[in-house]
Length: 261
Image (cartoon, rainbow, N blue to C red; front, side, top):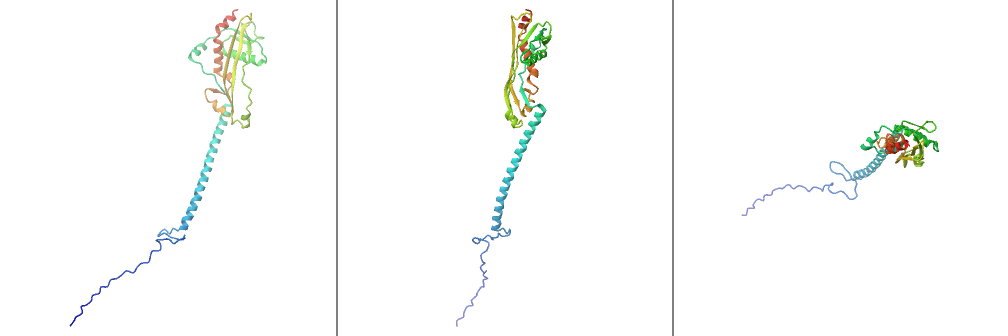
């Protein structure tokens, strides 16, 4: 008798297949694709990109405007400073003579010549008047007057040639209201001769000429703060007066010789 062995069947629970995740691959030409959790869509990315481009353009425009404002403020500050210094120190500046060296300062300490001078008239009279005033300011002579006002001068002084500055019209400076300066080279000084009032057989010629630049415009006010420049007139400058006095003292012996004739 055949006996059939029992068949043991083990039941295995099978996991049903899961459907593919919808978010793994975005559908073609879809702008509504959503990331998990942050809910960012392709449309959001496109909008953000467009806004970023607009923001960049706005930032660039703002940067240019800010740079232009800074430039205008700087230009305004510089122009304002030049105008202020020009109002304070004047709109004209002249280059001063060089200062004396130690040996020249020793010679400048001469006490004087003790002579009386009579300055002859010139044409036009302003040249003789300027020379008369300059000789008085040297302090080297006992008396300096016009030849028709002094009695018995030791020496007579004559203007040999006028030495004056250049006649320049600062056209560009005028039309720009002083912003663009005018620069010119000028000569200032005196050329004269001295002779005895008793005899004209011998004369002594003296000439001092200062050559320097003159600046016209608002920037001249800033130059006048520099020691080498002056806005008060070159003939009133102490260095100019010292140089004229030095030119006379260098010929002191010749002047005395002519005076005793």
